[in-house]
Image (cartoon, rainbow, N blue to C red; front, side, top):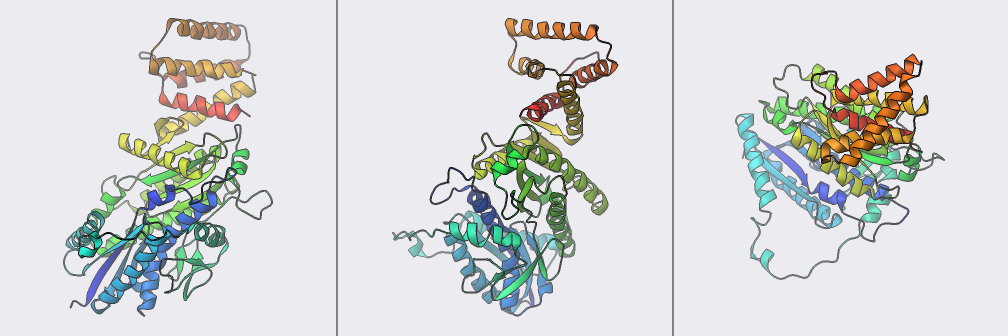
Length: 485
């Protein structure tokens, strides 16, 4: 038997589990915030607690924990501990499946710590893929016999009440062998402190939540929508590192793999917690989760846009400082997407799912970009849209331009996208003629400057070829939301 083995665990089905509705149906007055928060915390903490509990139960040193978080973990074990470790994970996997109604699965792969890291990783991935794609490959004939369906376990109270707000306020989390698939706030046979910074003895988790008006609870989505500037809307922001898996596959040793994984997890858990605690965000956004290469936040629509820009700025600086020795662009850019709720009490899980679809759409078209208000923009164009939004907002507020002004400007984009009709063209250019006649008699230089700047930003600076810029439509929609009450 080899002296040392590597064990890699993965949690599957997390997206489907987070999107699954409550067992008893949704309350009309609730968007399901606490249930979704509790489920995401459970998934996040399982990846952190299970490998630590495994080492504690086997009496092994904590230094054998390689990496954890983001739906997976990696530990180094002595060869004689293999059977005990697999029994431990098998017991946990049973309860994990029960609590999630069979949606979430815990799988693991074990291999000898021998040979080149690329070979070791290939062996681990082969075993994990076989368990993912053929879960009954190792089962006997009884797995294919008729059976009585066991009664489903209603675990929603555990996620919403035992986790959720309790985890946000707790100083530590615990685990007990009697309930190997559960994590509890503040109690258990083995406990670990919760921290916002990387600590060898603690669990690093981002758990900021916007406070309610009385400061006693987490703010519901209705309150977050009311705190937005302009129109009362809330939404979900999701972000994901571009080609992160490819970046990890290019490392040459486990000594390089582990620090790189920890580095990304530390950025998302640590920086996201700090950013959300800033004055402009702490009452407007709540964290759903932060993973090894992704994150999700919900809150006021205007705060989500500003938060996305700040996270991208810090991530760009983070990669420049920490990945300058790594060739290629893999893992050095991040894409995001925002989805807005169509109504105040809309289910959070549905908006979360829509943000995920928007993110997939953005990443399939480009990288290092954001899906915002129906368009995909490169990050540098988002800054242009923000500046143009400020210009339009000034025209509406300072110079009392009517809302028809915004709708008429947007009509140019609709005509370009969906074709033109004669009546629509006449109405649009009639509006432009009236607009120019008013401007021709004004002596307000600032007004003239804003008008010229607006036209240039909408059609571009090249006069030879007039083409409407995608950032312009985002800016107009952005300005419309800001000016609506």
